[in-house]
Length: 471
Ligand code: SAM
Image (cartoon, rainbow, N blue to C red):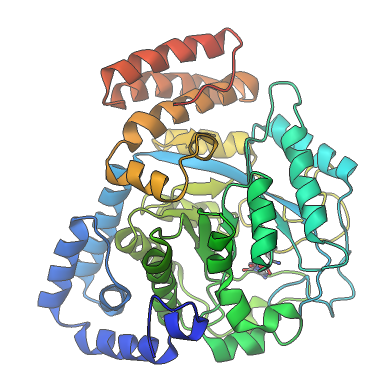
């Protein structure tokens, strides 16, 4: 029986409730009066339920669909402004004991090159990432209790935070590793991680079990209940995601929102981020064998609806998407993107020239400078900010910042300060010129005059060589 407050996966992601939701959505997709009232409700920024959201997803009326896109754009502007937070993934190890049929790391893949970074190699990778200008990483690893035990992950996090190369520093490490125990989540929290990210892959239990035929990840309940254990272990910023292409997108969308509702109902705080990966070609993986691939149009609609339905949750888009798609969806509510990513183990220090250890083919191959330049010419502020989590503004405290509309007095100056650091330390002359003009203009978008004056003062100090200020 469906119960968002239950701690049992099959009760908070109840299959019958999803089927009923899809039926309700089909029956109401042409009920334009209802669709209009839902759009009105969404404008109040209180979000929509999975049932309401599913009606909007099913609705094919062109004018209403356009209004969904416009509203997503408006919410993005009101809440997140034009800031886009930058990050890079760091692949630590592709040893894996699971059998995930869509992932090249699966145990039976004998031709992928297996690699696990030593602490020295991590130092080289992180130095290369710092030299690009990155301040925020998402570490990734396959699941392998012998090769990648929690002690290895913890040691790696310690190493990453310890590296100070020139003016570089990694100030926030997010973690994307397999579902684990409360005790291990507690250790990750103590190691100072930012967000714990775990993609559900699919919410459809039967498909999930087929797609994960062997290994610990086969256990649907253990995987689906991971965020509850993470929260029990003290991690209050968690990142959800679905791997689009594995199952019917309408099913996944309802499941994703039910998961968000569950976290809110049980822990009083929804997901910090939602990622929207689509399945990609990779070694031993042909994405066309999965029949549920979605068009760019549907992908954009999903992004727009996530923005409308969970307005306080950040949205992440990776380099699985090409520059054209990224361009299209960023304005619909994306708040974080990766730049200059390498999905191979050891791919940064060796320039990506080494043997095949990649997780998937990257579709955006631009350098970080090119991505930063592109964002700015499109009117966005690339932000390297990591202030919230370092100031203890995680979980409900971050949500409060959003809800009280204080985000512009906090995130805007932090974005400008960290962009300034980037421009001085890492940008090409052309990017620097564009960025300096942007900072000047964007200072005017800090609502509070005192904050604006303080920010101007700190920008001068950064010019003189100081670093790492935050509001
Ligand atoms: N091993 C960890 C786990 O089990 O969750 C997490 C890390 S894995 C490196 C990160 C994510 O990459 C997976 O959760 C999956 O959604 C995604 N992924 C795997 N194969 C992919 C493919 N062929 N194309 C796109 N994304 C893929």
